[in-house]
Image (cartoon, rainbow, N blue to C red; front, side, top):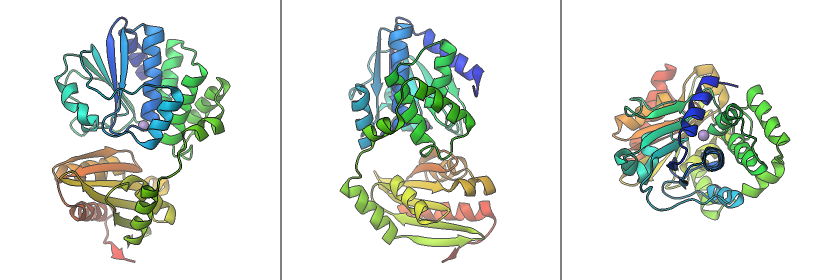
Length: 337
Ligand SMILES: [Mn+2]
């Protein structure tokens, strides 16, 4: 178990919800980790703890994969307001702004708020009174939930095990950044009935044509820079910045920065190779996304090798600032390739 005290703390909080009404809110759009963890928290609250009611909310638009996963798990995702609840559980949230359309309701709610997360905490922390159960030592929230189930003595059924497996699988970039602890947990979930290829196939959705076009346009519009041994690629697309940033990495750069207009500002997605992070120690979430977001009047956050920022600026200005931050972090000058 990675962090027994954390798992026990969360276990105590969940157990205290007997007879109460709880709303679970994921980050904007949701993903396999957020939805998998939300599903298991809901089941524990309803079946073990005995909550009066538990709803699951995904702010803004659901991604195709989230829709597929919710359908596969038969998890109902509420589209309306949170309403009158005793507690709100923010899952895999990263930063408060990621509560999207629910932010105002969460902040104004006459309810206790609990954060269950594995992202770097926001720079200024969470508001006073929030109960925060988070640790960056976990590769996914679903991994934390495996420990919570163990501490609570809950035997996960097959669909709960599948939900946690899928969250772990996708949040570790298909297990490519899994360590022994993660793999041990995956084996445990397999013993509980998960058939990995079946679970994965049931939530893989064929890439839609607009994402294909965005990826190809992203590649056409790419600029490539070199700084020492590192290659940095930037590009602009009006949507799908995150998959485009991932696609550019697979072409061979060490860091990719992809921006596009978003609302009245810009969204920037960043990705880096594991190798870049381990050799430079540059954490994209903390060192780039949080800084760029804050300096350009927005916000940002994420993980060491995957992050996103929202800025009140043009996409070009956001990319420019990312590049100049990288120069100062790496102590060198970027040259065009
Ligand atoms: Mn996650």
